[in-house]
Length: 421
Image (cartoon, rainbow, N blue to C red):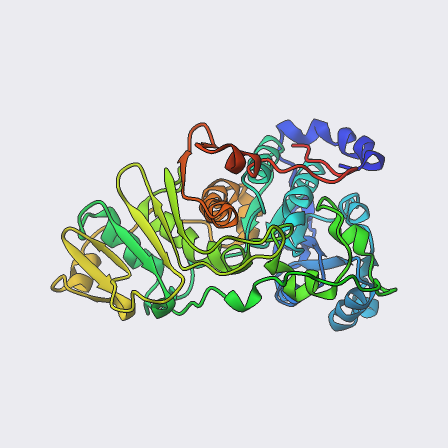
């Protein structure tokens, strides 16, 4: 963290051992009910921030290093009429004592730093996916959130809400089939274009970018933040930043947690990760992310996840085991599957209302802990892709069997930025 904010954050360190819930959140002493009074701020005014504007709670602040984007969201939110203040520096937002929740809607290379800073300042956090750009940053977020007693939500919801991609049913039905052994064990999950996903390979980066002048309304150096200093080119920022290793992991980084977090839940792997990742791709550029053909993850018990980048496995079951298969549209070769599932106990209930989690201080359904593990699966795939190398991984020691891969777990940050949990 930049030195000029260290003193402020150290002053809040005493909050680490207790959970502070403002009276307005609890509706005490005649104060406004929590549904109207939980206060929040949004860091990042890019495309995804439009959805955060609609989330419940009283919005007090917006922040972005691009003046035009900030002005656009300020206008959209009715800032003047609603008392919403705009900021250039996220640290000023986090320093406000009247804000309960920080929404992190920036590119992923900022997710870890901002989430840790918010947690240390006594804020609850609603973070975009992927949770963090590196495995090491994820470990720091977990430590900060838990040591400071904060509530954390990752912004993907398919493990508990809506029909899962291409299946026509909520994930709960797949979890029930797996947890009650209707498919047998071990299980294999295949994620391909058949389930509605093309991995957004059109977001691959471009090589040989020419330097361009930085727009006067855009603080490019602050946007880079902890990322390496590189000459400005518009394709490196904003909507196309996902195509560069310094800021994200391509389509896998962007959408992978939407697809892989429910799989972690289905397989009952919320407290662990795979022990290997195999990659089929061409050698990658050091800066720009390219396509891959196939990524396969294997767990210690033999369960597998196959990511079909070429959409070759069009006849594959979504999930299968020695006793049966479930295909797209929830079709199955198991007779009377839905009737059998209806007779079985449901999975344990989850807190799926973020404000309820804030009021009760109970973990949200997708939190810093299980979110860390599903993000680790994503980042394992990104590392294998970046190195174009299949790898073994120890989910207890959090290390690979390869020195270059291990260097990508804890990647250095450009000064003065550094992670403090």
